[in-house]
Structures are given as structure tokens and as C-alpha cells.
Image (cartoon, rainbow, N blue to C red; front, side, top):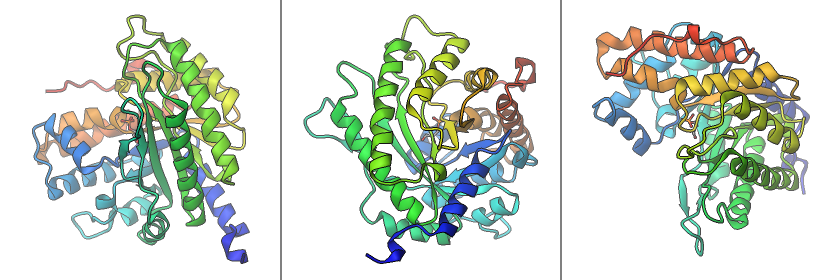
Length: 351
Ligand code: 13P
């Protein structure tokens, strides 16, 4: 075994600095890494055709929004987007890093069914991953993301489903660190279902146990990664919805039980919460405070739904859509300090 198979001191230092910058105070990550089928779904809601050029124009709108660098530390890109450029020819990764925003890349290849389960899924994309990660770093990415998807249902998620996903997350995380990319480790427990918040608590704790066991087994440097989980909430079809304070309290309780303090930050996904809910929950958690890790955001829909609704594919709406993104980013930036109030909300209507 040669030394080159081990992380160098320099590489470890770079990973730790990048991870810390991703969860810098008052900032969070914009998840703009929708795959082609997912962005098509988003564009369908505003009746915009999902052509490569429309996707590029939309991403350019997001990445050039004035002042977002004050609240956005990093952006997760999709493979196609990392290879695209702004209208003036500047590659998106350079445009972002010139603004002090760290470019990242989604590297998983979606989910497939696990045999002998009730339609449970595992994330694929490990084959050839080491080479892809090297290329992404050359293209300017400094962090990566891999999403595992777990559903709550009758006897679900099974230990088999959690174990397979935890294994893949840790394999991906170790390979990312070797390539000099900070892994965002994303075990998403879907909000869909009529389960109560206590069920979500138990599933979250069981899942995090598997995930951190695998990360430890596979020698992932916890200081050089970011955890991106779902919050502990009631299922979206549960008749009794837990209030904001309960979500905040239970989320912190479960993560304190399961996430080592060496992890620099937890950047939550929004997972189908409304934009306002996602901000209010993050704010309430930061008001409770006293956590060993930063409590931040890595929102997709909760940052983009409103700007997308304003844009509607029309060039004349670009500035207003950018202003909407800035407002949303600012609200979440304030929530990082527990200083968000609903009167900071932008006024908008989805037409
Ligand atoms: P949402 O915030 O829309 O859940 O997206 C975050 C993400 O990156 C999902 O993988």
C-alpha cells in the first residue's frame, strides 16, 4: 500500500476549510441540481419547455442574482449545468467561484428498486464514480452530493433498505474525499405518508445510526463532510401536524443523539415543506441553539419555488425573479441566526 492511498494533510485541511465555508454563519446552500426529468416537472408548473437552452437560461438567472453571495455559500449543480456557461461564455463554475460561491455537483445516478422488498429503493452510481469525481474537480466542483431516499410505511424503511443506502453513502463519501471533494451525505426520509412525528423520530434515529456506523467503518473524515437530512416532522398526510416548535425540538433531540460533534454542519433539505415552513423550522432550531454543529440549509424547492413562479420563462420577469431569490435567501440567512420574522417575507402570488 502506497502513501498515495491515504489523504494528505493538505487535502484534509482543504476539505475541512471547504466544509466550514459551506456552513458559514448566515449562509446556506442552494440546491439547483435537479436532474433533467425533475427540472422538466418544475418547468411544467410554469408551462416552460425543458430545452437545454431554457435550463441554461434559468440557471443563469439564479447564479447571477445580485447579492445572493451574502446568504448563499454554495450551489449544487447537475452534470449538464457544470458543463454550461453564462451568455458571455463564463463557465458557471467560474462565475460562481468568482462571486465567492462554492460550486458543487450531484454525483448519484438516481434510485432503483431493491429486490425482495415492498418497492424500497437504493441509490446507484458507484461504478466509475472515482473517475467522474476527478473530472468534476477539474471542472471546478469543490463538493459533491449523493441522495438516498427512504420511505416511511408499513414495516418501512426496512433495515435492509437503510443498510444498503448507508453503505453506498459512505462509499461515495470516502471516494469524494479522496478526490478532494467535500461529500454532502443526504439520507432523505420522505415526508409523504400519514405517519406521526414520533414515527419519524424513530426512523430518523435508526437511519442515522446506520449512516454514522458506515461512515466510521469506511474511515470518512467527519470534519470534512456535511450531513443533509430531512427534518423530523409529521407525515404530510398525518391528521395531526406538529407545530414549528415541536419540529425544531424533536429534530435537535434526535440529531444530538446520533450526529458526532466532529461534523461541522447539518444542512437540511426542504423536502416538500413550503418555503415559509422550511424557513420557520430552521429559525426555530437556531433559536434553541447550543448544538455542536452549524444548523444550516441546503434547499431546492424552498429557495426556488417562488422565483420560478415569478419568472415564468419570460425575460422581462428576470430581475423580479432574481429579487425573489434574494428575499428567500435572506430570510433563510436570518433563520441561521434565529432572527427571521414572518414580516421579512416577500409578497408574491404564484400565477
Ligand atoms: P429540496 O429542498 O427541494 O428537498 O431539495 C433538496 C435536494 O437537494 C434534494 O436532493
